[in-house]
Image (cartoon, rainbow over all chains, first blue to last red):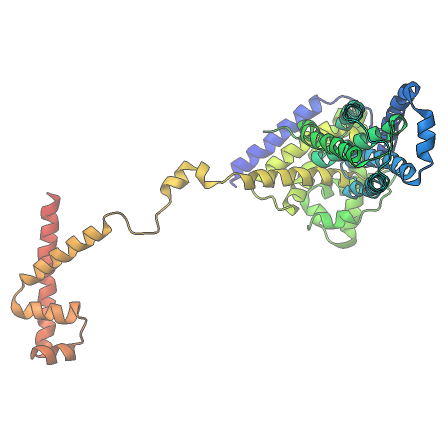
Length: 227
Length: 235
């Protein structure tokens, strides 16, 4: 590189530094990722409280006495919390990407326990098989709850600086989907069955995929302007 | 990784205050030579740099323009070094520096002064460096450079090369045919067949001296005929 072009580049740097300094406004420091995750979880719980009047408390008590349903519900809650925490962590520059592994354990437990419920449905076929209408309403519920939760999460994550937008968005999607599945538990009129699990899996997959595509773009749009 | 090696070993807790003597050293450390200084001195310089940058960023978050300007200027060589450690070369280093500066500006609220500054900066720089390398890798360079494409020499023979060679051979054969008998034999035996003087002498029954003289005269005559023909072509 010639001396003049080297000087040109360094004066370019000076110009950029000056324009950035000119655009400097005091900023409020971002709260720690843990606090931000708690705030999001609080909103998700708020959803649950709002929906409480519609809950089927008797059925919930009956289902919670079944071990694998209890484990599945608990694991969904755990998955939502850990995935949200991990997403907020990795959206801050300099934090370890290994946080992304945190929700793997709870997620496996959640899927495994739900799968057990499905097996039980096959072993005991007398259990209540949901009709198409019920499956539809279940799907609508999942997407309807996780969509606003996802949007909120994306808005909150955009305030940070996600250097890995796709991974961050996928974690956010997992958090939203797991939260929706956990919230679904008190309103679910029947036990887990194969179709049921399939619908849940589809809904969760759709949410994570959409988040990975749309959310990833959204997050990348703020972080890396295409030149 | 020359630059980042001493910085990795930074203690997690920043020093509370930089003494006046430390400031001069830190200014020196901001240049690439200072950061590359070896051993304990470099560790110390790295710690001073870390402390100073962290304090400057905290001040910038509160809206201190002077501290922000100094911070960004100090970051320039550090970012360039980190980008080079990531494998970025040449003009691309300056692109990474600019893109990293823009990201620092956008992400400045995410810096937590309780944590060290350089890992935060490195995460952003590495990301921008990888983005830059990927973009460069995706774009096939030569197809987008019409001059290089046009000027690239073909490895094979030019079109019509064989025709030209045939024509040249025919013209040479014609010229040789027009030579006196002795000279023609000398050219055919010594030049075309690549025989030695002894072999040629044995085959033609002429002396080696006569062959040499005839070859010399033949070449002279051919040179004259062929160059005349060439000039005639040109006119």
